[in-house]
Image (cartoon, rainbow, N blue to C red):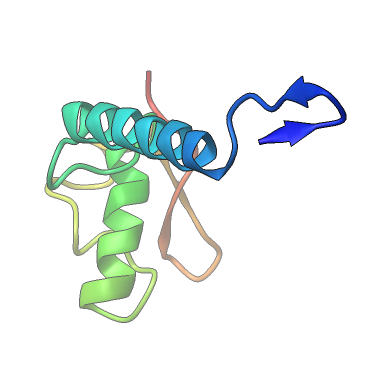
Length: 92
């Protein structure tokens, strides 16, 4: 097509082609980096236990979702005024 004496570069076909190529690259990278049954990168097991407790038990009590006593998890959980364990921070 001519517009004002100049030839147009691209058009809707080029736009669709570039969009499909970008989508294919994105899907390929996403599938390459996919790791099933994992929690969010950077979150510690205590936050994962909190999410599991909400889903499985319907509460925020993580003490029944972690093995060992309070002494084992002392640096990573805090004890609330009501006696519930709460995650303090992520571990490196």
